Length: 369
Image (tube, rainbow, N blue to C red):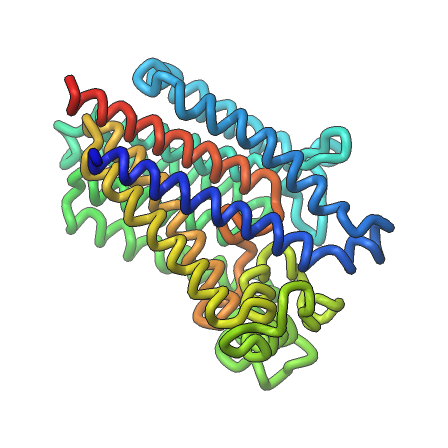
């Protein structure tokens, strides 16, 4: 079998299995909470399935789109994402929950423009770095404009506020800089200049300082700032090797907050045990490995950068989410790709899969030709 076809099969198959696991676990983790708050145990499941149907259409569109023609509209598409980020901050236009204004509400469904931005920024940066590949050493005319765009995007997301997404955008963009051939010294300077800003952001808000304290010493205040992470530890520890059984989690009974979103990995660990979480990890590894085959065999520099950005995004979000659930990283509000409840994130992930399939097929046609 053609390596690209094999990679496509593995990539698509692993994504489908992860989505299927997400469907089951979202219902398991949310049913009791949904029954108590929405009077419908399948409330979140129904909404997730609706997003999944929409995501299916977007995946097909992304898989069949002419990415080379779309490159002509990379700037207008990015501008549209920035406009949405500004509009979501406007009172009575954007929807606020828990002190954050990140969503639009349409007919009972929500849309988070920062998820749209993730895909759009990767597409724009891949196009920009490809067009500027002969002048990557020109800091003034190449790197500074790219950093300005990144800073504008990350800054608007920070205002919402959403530090986790801002950091994700910065890391993925730096990966693209490195892959495009930006000199190591310039990259080091960018990182060193960005670290004080990140530290300032971490310490600027009381709740972020509390998250850092909870990360360092969660058991000092298990009923306060350490509550969420300690409950996650209890869920993972209770699962053992085989888990307590599907649907039998105790932590989802109003103990572990965000059990069907940010901390769904912990519920998987409790109900399906070490074997269940290992299976999820293996599926992500298979997906990333197969996607990297696409990256290395992409037919041109733009496609290579675009595919690398997409797989870096999904891989980074998976690492952060699992790291948070296991206490290896401070708490951040990033969902587990393909699995967590969250319509906008699911749509973005499915678009990413469609684009990766698109790039893989383009490369296959190039080989055959």
